Amino acid sequence: MEGMLFHAFVYLAAAVLAVPVAHRLGLGSVLGYLIAGILIGPVLGLVGAETKDIQQVAEFGVVLMLFLVGLELEPKLLWQMRGRLLGLGGLQVGLTALAIAALAFSLGLYWGLGLAVGLVFAMSSTAIVIQTLSEKGLTKTEGGRASFAVLLFQDISVIAVLALIPFLAQPEPLALAAWLSAAAGDNSAAQGAAGLVAGLPNWGYALVVLGAVATVVLGGHYLSRPLFRYIAESRLREVFTASALLLVVGTALLMTLVGLSPALGTFLAGVILATSEFRHELRSDIEPFKGILMGIFFITVGAGIDLPLLFGDFATLLGLTLGVMGLKALVLLALARLFRLRAGDRWLFALSLAQAGEFGFVLLGFCVQNGVVPTGLARTLSLVVALSMLLTPALFILYDRLIAPRLRNGKGPAPDTIEEEGTVVIAGIGRFGQIVNRLLVAAGIETVVLDHRADQIDLLRKLGIKSYYGDASRPDLLHAAGLARARLFIVAIDDRDRAVEMVDYCRRTYPQVRILARAYDVGHLYLLKQAGADLAVREVFDTSLGLGAAALRELGMHPYKVERMTRAFRRHEAAGLAGMYDLWDQDPDIARNLALQARIREHVGTLQDALNSDRMQLHDRTERGWTPPSRGFSREPD
Image (cartoon, rainbow, N blue to C red; front, side):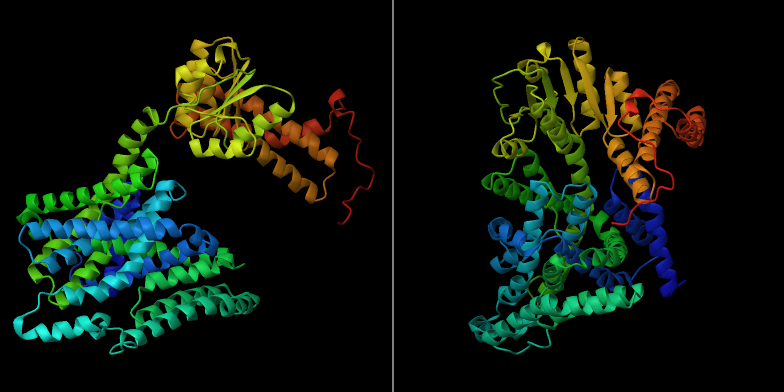
């Protein structure tokens, strides 16, 4: 069966079936898409020659992705990362290309061919890396930021690489004069299909490029906002969505016509609109298109793998792939050390960018067109690119399960020398622990604060908040902090498993110390209680209850009545949690614990009765500061 509908059904069905399974197994969505492509392509043969055509359309997902990334970066933030953008990115591309070129030259290959192959493999997969970093919540880490800076430079450098490739072909004797003429300044070959700039001299090409960039910057700043404001007034959601897509497609088309990377152009447009009041609306409208196109792109990569060629000489291809990834990882590790990234960020940076990228397919095709790389070698190298992309999710799994835990539990930087003891020891000084510490210090309580993030400790010291660097899960550090003589130990770290381990250790080693702990949810609260915490507090319970109370007051309910209802809710919740603990302890898996499910339904069903009965009770001494609502009370307008 053929046809557009059939192929659409096959691709979407593969994604729907394979990706949830891969995500449930902890493999990530990218690897799920790649596996789905392998199944419907080389294995089952449901798709074939149309894969390349679909891939050209799906690559627009990369364009949309970089537009959304640009929306998150204000121009001042981009200026702040200029050092890493130019230094880290430029050194990565240059050193990787030169290292591979030198290796190829030592094997007897023509230097131009070696340099072309080096430039192909120097590129990494923007699609896979940013998608995976975003899924795992690593985009805000130093390693994630450094990876993004390198990826952005790679996208920019593609322009220069496309211009350089025609000069790398080995010149024939009769064509030497033409080759020298091209090297002297004729850029028509390098610009290929860029219709608006074909045949222009270099200075003319530069003017056109600058004009295109200026159009994107000025248009995005001065024209897009009035246009979106006008369209928003129509209150037609589909027209706003069409306008957002028009902006991205138009920018990509303009960049393509002048020989620039469409991804680079849309990224620039996103940066310009990062301060716009329509930023969130643009993101919500474009995100679904980006997601599905990126998924189809990864499926086409898997479907395009040539299994006969792969298994015909699997050992050689796997060796080439691992060799390229290993060499890139060594270069990246060296640069990470040079730019003083921490150990965890260093390994994240190296492993995330060790693969070749989707631009490798484009560059290899351009190399074949210009006679730089033979067709047979290009097929092999394309397979190496695809195989490295296929192995990338496995590298992230390696980082998550082997490297990150070892770095966390390893020596790391030496902890600070703790010079004093306090009544309270606090583990974790994030957004939760800071509030607790500020309240205690303001009340005159001596505290000792520990946190394993050195950058957070440095920032707090600049703000005048006393704290110490160190892993609070280490027994020697807790002893040095004076936990044996403290009255309270407050566990306020983000890591749920480590929090339970710390509570368990403290309860066994320092039974006289009372333990207060931050819980993520009810299940975590029960685990902390089981480990020995005297009190565990859900991190969002009070703020959620406070917001609910504010909503009742906004709806006109008297503050006295709201206060009584929130107190009754709190009592009902505490009684319910205590009553459900025994059932949870029998089987923590709520999905299989039928008795606990029944108790939860009963608890939810009795809430309204509990609030109504409490409202009918008389005042108690804790409510003397409240007066009953006046007769005919109504909320005064602001």
